[in-house]
Length: 346
Image (tube, rainbow, N blue to C red):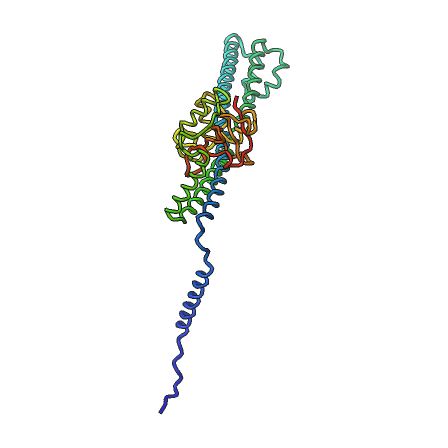
């Protein structure tokens, strides 16, 4: 006799597990179907180049903040020294006035005007001193000096405090720009890590080949044509930069073991005995602007609309510069970057 018992229904827990498993399988299938394909070597290069350019822009801002910090630190130190010297002079003047009071006491009493000055509220005396006939000429002169010195010290202290505030703000900007540069470089490295070792090597080779076009690259025997320096100063600076061919690019570095773009140019001119600003934007205004046809060896060459890259004109359509992270100081065609103008340092 056939059994009429109803088949056992799966438990609610089992149904839940089966349903979840099926849903997960569907989700994984959909995810696999819609997963972004691995970026091509060309896509990675385009994005990395853009990140390096952004990093260089931030680096020049970082360099500017660092330069401003150095200037402010010197100004703060000078003002604080001035305040300290002024306080010593003020103390000497007060000691001198106290000596006068002691002498007056020994000879029969303290002058009423001096008593007022030495009271618990001497500042009020400074407003009234000119009206007191009892003050001797010497005492009056000393009191006027004290009053003037107090005003000067107050101004200097206020100026110093303002510089200290500016310095704190500049240090904050410096930290923000440093973080921005590091973030851009980390993002670029993350993209490069998606490539195989062979693909990364191919990119590096392509970059070197691009730089070597028309005789560029890191070869010290590059064809620079018949270009001559615009001056003895420019020639000495260019020779110093040539001695650093093959030295790695490092953001914020100003030599001698590594450089960024404006670090190389400012270092090289320093070796020649001249001081130029630290950033490419400031270097763009450090001399006489000239067109491409006027360029001579050792002139600065400014690139990009926001002036964030600088190098040396080397001759024969070549520039010598510190290009970007992962590359070294090298020659490169001037046409590989958007030329803006040249700058001749005199």
